[in-house]
Image 1 (cartoon, rainbow, N blue to C red):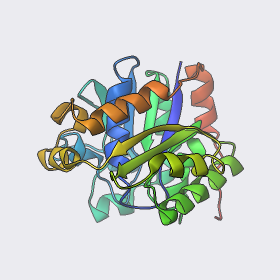
Image 2 (image 1 turned 45 degrees about the vertical axis):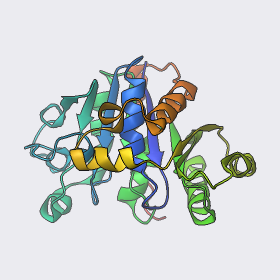
Image 3 (image 1 turned 180 degrees about the vertical axis):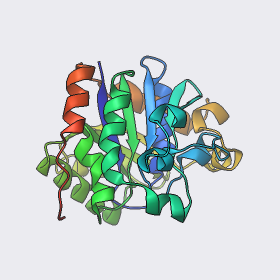
Length: 255
């Protein structure tokens, strides 16, 4: 089985990478999970997974300087494919090769999480959403964040990508998240997976270079992410069929 989820927001600052890694760790208790930093322009995953000194990254793979196996690392119960942060690496990388990378990874895992770019302003940015089976939309309970999330959903459904659910993040105690979630679900296709409270633990984990669920496994935010993972259904699929689909995926020339 294999299913690919694009963790997307449409807006920076929602905690998308923290959410991607947290969902990955929680899902790894039941599945073989691979997390890919598909944000090739503003990569952050390597800092969250303690891989800031990784010698080979997705940039090298997309530039055809290394096989994908050289850029995979076992971390915290997951397989992690980080992306580099250099401008030269970004310049030399061919984003279209992400199709082949995902196809290759699909033959050896149950779940792939693509940490997607926060905006839909280029072919590079939209590719993870086009490749995925479904998206997980990470939202803050604000009008701008929800509006940008709706743009992600519109783009996803245009290209046949479904919506697995909504994940509200950085929720403050003063915010009536139940009321916001109820209204938001009228416009989104998927259910609310969980509401993750704003947490100093998440910031401390980021500074420590460790995933939240490893740094503070019992904090309220970590508990909420586990709840989200439990609510996220993973569909059965043939790795071979998935690989063929990714290789033949049509990337839009114009947005």
